[in-house]
Length: 148
Image (cartoon, rainbow, N blue to C red; front, side):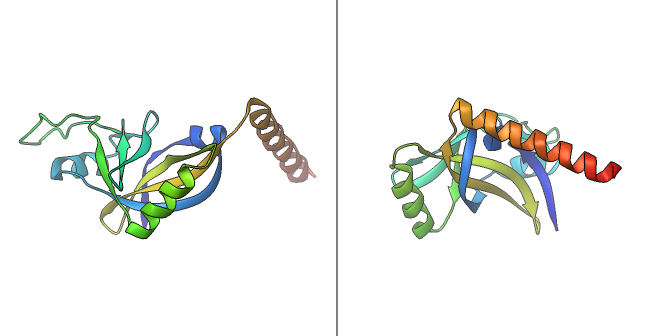
């Protein structure tokens, strides 16, 4: 069973999602407890690579209330745990024009905290308007069918 801990709805609005990947996150024990309570935010976060490894920057994890060591920086850089083949593929595709890697959601799966990341291409302003129009049209059609 999967429990959603944090979601990044803005990513679907700002980007075309091409491919999704599941990654583990390197965390301390108190961070895991805090995340399982849902005290995590990925709204301002982004993903980058350094020395052939992937990292998430700006993910905010509120310090755990009952933790012994409360000195952990809530927005520290955390390493993502991916296979080498996946990292190389992501880095290779990220170098292409317009591509970036964005965090989509953080969830708990079988007791482990995982993050879903995606290779994405940025939307232009007119693409965002088209997406909103299509979503609105679908909502109107569904409402009409429901009342019919």
